[in-house]
Length: 346
Image 1 (cartoon, helix red, strand yellow):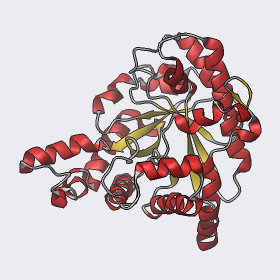
Image 2 (tube, helix red, strand yellow; image 1 turned 180 degrees about the horizontal axis):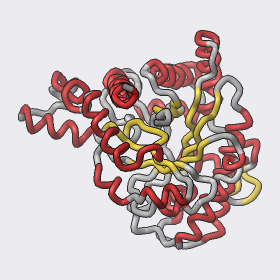
Image 3 (cartoon, one colour; image 1 turned 30 degrees about the horizontal axis):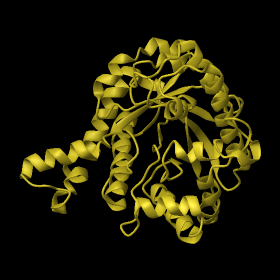
Image 4 (cartoon, helix red, strand yellow; image 1 turned 135 degrees about the vertical axis):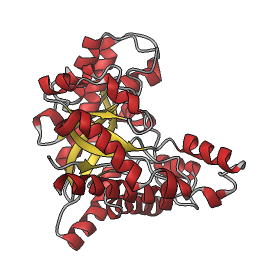
């Protein structure tokens, strides 16, 4: 059995005294950098302390505006939608350098980082909806490639282990008008640099209905599946297709659909758990336990075996009520992986 890699998707709860509005202003105005940097650095360290092996930089920005705000800034582009290479910076990665340096000093090792970038189709749909301008899609893809290139070249105190292209609309959004071949081309353009580096290139899908698009993209070798909340998603994937294209899976083994989880508690206790918060801990003490997480991993492994390379929560935990309960979920995932591995090593 090959070693499984524990990663996370990215988003994380804010500290209790910080609002989304404050964060948006801090990112746009850059007048509270010390506090902003501390929040991001602290969240990243919490992920590492919870056992995440390849942690995604903490995502507190809107996934589209994080990149579009730069791509659409006249000062940052060399032509419409094509970002200048020097402007293609992911601020959060710059911020992580200090936290990563401290981690390196304490442990002797650089932390491994997963870099999540919004895919070209998702950015296109945000601005152009159900249209079909392939030249603009491809230009956005080139911009994404430049963000990735800049990230890999600039990393000093951490090692970028995984590049993840976030494309939640593929397989879900009826506005997608592009042919599969056009999407493969755009995804190839957006991962051109990463495909030549010693990194895994993942696509994060919310539905695996069209996972073969990723298999047909030469630079993408990992397909993320949100299978904890939707186990039937694994039925849509053919192991032979993965083998034939040398593709691997990133399997979700812990649910992150917090609103559905809370609704179960609301019904169980006939209350509003968001207000009557005494029951919230049950999510990680009785529902998403290490044993349940290990069972999900066992079920997935029985189907795909060593075609599974990464495991972790389904999606981000930005909507979870507190950082503490989010960290407990990550701890449970680590323990669930250990339960699974110990069973197969014994």
